Length: 233
Length: 403
Image (cartoon, rainbow over all chains, first blue to last red):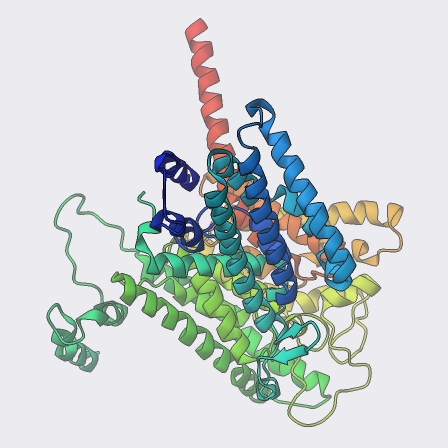
């Protein structure tokens, strides 16, 4: 598991007394999850939400922002509390933290973005069960100082977010032919001329199986660019 | 042949190691072995070889498809002129059919082999003939007027995602041709389902009164076994509509309508040992059993659902059931590998095919779903068959020891 490699690095981070704010190690906490250690394409976590809410870009963006919020504050809170959380009940404590943050997000969405909140339905609530979040709490925030934990939270959430948005863009462009933005309306990406020639929107793109295949394509492209990700067998 | 040999011999150095187009050796190799018997000789190990190789296998399968293909060509014209209420000669019907079918074949082979060539050149291994059969099956399971670009997209999708990413020919997890069909079915449902797509009504004139264009599968949902033909005339009896569908004069995908032509192909496949008779036989039995169950419980428990009352022997000749069981289910790569496994595999395909078709009218072509589903399940079937055998022998071993 890739989380273990991060844990091995932890003692060094803790031992070095004075470290520049954005040392190369801290930078890597931000950048690694974007590519080499991406939570979706490399660790294969959080797949369920990547399939469920990537039909429209706006949903995916809202979902991604929610996860960034929960992850960032959750990692900070857990990291602050890490010395006083009894290790026997740590999962429960982590669950309480993530649940309260998710409820907060859910209420905010309901109040300010009722349309999107309705369309996201249970999936905002299901952020609680998103394996990436609990995984980072358990693997990183429980053993690291606040600042690296915050960076790690943002890094992993952004790694999750960009995949989500990329998948959503592919699905909405080929599935609906246009991306709808709140307030602006739809912006067409497939020219009308195509439709006159008999082009049709691909319904399969709207169905969940195609999300899996789009994620697969991203993994394929990523691995052919970044050959160290390929496992030996 | 001599001229071809000369030509190939002349360009050979260009493709050989050190030549200008060395990268494209797989393409040259494929063309050469396609035209001539390979001149490789065995250098070690067993020297006695069966003369059958992949090319010959594929060629025999294509040969088995020829009756269905020719009948499909005729039927395209027959349905068209019947729906338009026009008289036409056999030649006219055949010409019409070829005009529709040949572009489909060209697109399917062009795209599929193109993708295959690209992958082989990239990976640097020889081009296998796996696509020869898939490329012929794809046009045969399409509705007549499906847009060509959709066939191209679907073919590329299924070759890449079902075959090439899993390792190329011999590694496909699903049937390539059926995946292409399922892709269009889900991606562009208006081109692959409903009443409009099965008979070509373009090209001047209007359809006759009473024309609906529904296939028998569509009709059965509302009317049970009271079928009518493309011109809207009802068949006199169930036996009549059975005969029409057995011979194949019904609307449907291009190659799937004629049970007779498909059975001719099945006979060749079974005789040459290329298609597993177990899968074909037990597939038909499975379909008959499910149809029989529906016939038994239909009138008593679900009198409103007329589909259940279509006689089981009629179910077998409707739609793509036979075509799927004979040409798709027997795909040696995606089918179950064990002898006993093939029995279960075939039986379940037949059973599920009829079950899906009757119970879920949204998926009239249940056999497609059934075969794809059983393709996925085939390794599981094999696992249990092997495990059962191990257990049986362990038991025998134990009784031996105690005795």
